[in-house]
Image (cartoon, rainbow, N blue to C red; front, side, top):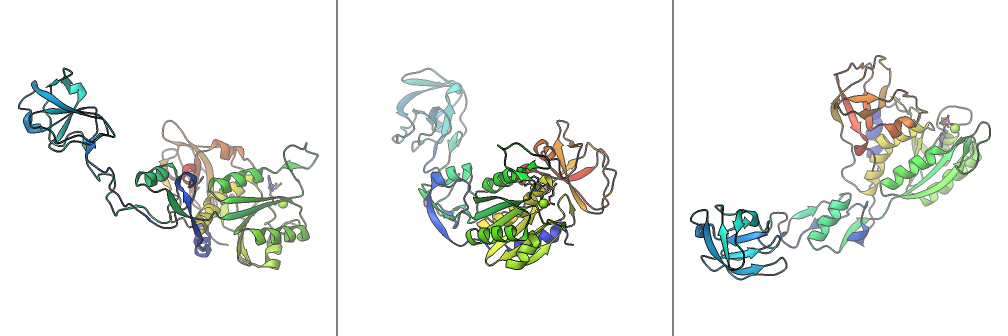
Length: 397
Ligand code: AMP
Ligand code: MG
């Protein structure tokens, strides 16, 4: 059986980044992956400008606090002033270009008097309250690297250098289906023996949260024929197929057999809890990842393995989550024989609490938690011990 680290390495080795890209208006790039570096053709800010509402002066013109200077011009944001006449002040507003000859801006709170004269109540320091041309971005600088996932800040940054469109990879197509004769779609009452297909919603949210195009193929009955047909259809339309259920060794588990029949299985089973049964394979050019059916197992294995795999397939360069060292506020006294990922919440005292029921069927634990505690084989934990914690902020989206 593979360790979780071995499985992740093997998956990332097999994840071939997309090649096709197109230019998309910046406003439509949220969640997309940049296909080429963005190089600025301009300097940001373009000119020295005022960080405050106040008065632009030459510091040497203010001999002592209380000095009075004539106000020789008014410069609003969007306007360009004239060179500062020696011995005068320019009324200036935030974002307005600092006039040539001025080397400081006094904030208006440090000045008094209005109209034609200003009394300067503080000594200006040369350079004070001036935002320098190029202090954010120099012309020719790389603003965003290829492989960057575009979020709100990246969209704004691209616009700040005047980019109208960005080259982004096409969206990765991910088809999902959910195996199980017991599954019912919400909206229909349950009959005895049935449960709702919660994985459909969990995985839809996870796949769409990454910016992939979701192809939802619904519930598939527990027969080899139906599983094969679903897999064949999914593989013909998607870059990656992700399923839940049917990957153990039960009598109604046909997923692995279907992948073996239509393509090949390359990895099976990972030594961790939750989530031991997990299949990776290929059907023609399409990747296949079969997740376990237990709702917590499907969620956790998606976060730890499928997410980095999909991100790399999408062309993203930063695909691995970060883990942090956080003090435990709980006791974990039963050393396991598999690595465990426990659902935990960060408390106000800075310590972690565990959800009381760590069963792989209890999805409430995932909604309650802030992340996963990574417990090594044989590890026990006492309150105050430091543990490895992976926040959901690193695993979702
Ligand atoms: P399996 O991996 O198919 O053996 O399923 C393991 C457990 O997960 C069983 O209790 C199933 O009923 C449950 N399960 C499987 N698929 C789903 C699903 N789509 N939504 C909720 N529970 C599921
Ligand atoms: Mg099943």
